[in-house]
Amino acid sequence: MSVNKNNMHKHNIYLDNAATTCVDERVLESMLPAFSLDFGNASSLHHFGTRAKELLEKSRTTIAQCIVANPNEVFFTSSGTESNNWVLKGIAHANQHKGRHIIVSSIEHDCILNTCEWLNDEGYYITYLPVDSDGIVDLERLKEVINPKTVLVSVMHANNEIGTIEPLEKIGQICKERNIYFHSDACQSFGKIPIDVNKAGVDLLTINAHKIYGPKGIGALYIRKGVNLEALLHGGGQEAGLRSSTENIPAIVGFAKAAELSLQEMKSEEIRLSLLRKKMVDFVFSNFPNAYINGHHSQRLPGHLSLGFHGLEGETIRLLLLLDEMGIAVSAGSACSSNDTSHQASHVLQAIGLNPFEARGAIRVSMGRFTTEEDIDIFMNSLSKTLKSLTSIFSDNSMISCAQR
Image (tube, rainbow, N blue to C red; front, side, top):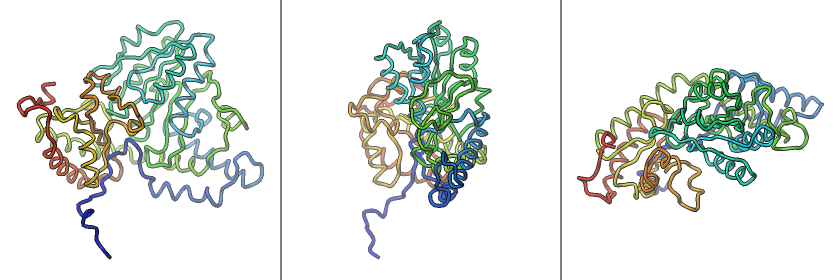
């Protein structure tokens, strides 16, 4: 067998789990029968359909248990993006007789922000909540901007770019006291940290499978009983008539298995990943005085780290590509940012106070279930070599530490 010498230095280390995860072999195994044996349409009355329906409802119950909800409050969708679109458009249209005002945080995922732009064109008024330098929403500002025409508040549970975890319980209490629907996009947090929809006070919650070692193309929306929400898709009346489309049983089964495994392993994984993150942070700050962290230092997802290097912000893409040549996959900002043809600076990083130049300069390192300590050691060594090969636009004397920022 011939050996390609150009690839001998590659390590094949994946540190972009916030973008997507591989499908766990246990998840894949659970899905296979639904492709070949239990392949029926869940709406059919014969035994093939009945078996598919049983798998559908069993999966719904499993996922409901993971967020402490009732099974009849969980509705399957094709993705987190669809769920978020459904919430904003469905609540807006169903409750426009009450008002046309919606509040979202300024650091939401693009699928929320772009939907808000669409709703704005439709005659709705959107307020964007500011965040502090750690990415935490301004609760006092939330209280100020709520008015009698407000129908929905939407704040993500954990930010996909900087990993900061928002105070859902406090936001939920504010919304409950004012009788306003509260929605949270929990695609990044689901399966990684505990979620109880009742304690959090959310009326609607978006989750998906591909961030927790499940298949792509399947998500879900929790809708608290009694919420007035208009359907987004109309057709055969699946999902209690609220989301018509033949159910993707293999993906739904995989989603449920992935959720079950994540719940079982959550505590141990949270500890393990937090220790790996600490090791990485200690190394970076010990070796690079120009390094800084974006987002809250402790109130963040356990396996998530957003890093910047003062003076090297303009070299971020080159840094990412050099690491990729070494077989190490990290991200610049969010995965979706690569689809932005305008090449604008990150709206999340600008919202926490970074200037437009700095807001183009973050790398996101997101560890996962299959990340090992050896992977982190190799990454740190490779990062050192790569950073030393890059040239700062400033002199060494102008580099500042995170503590000085």
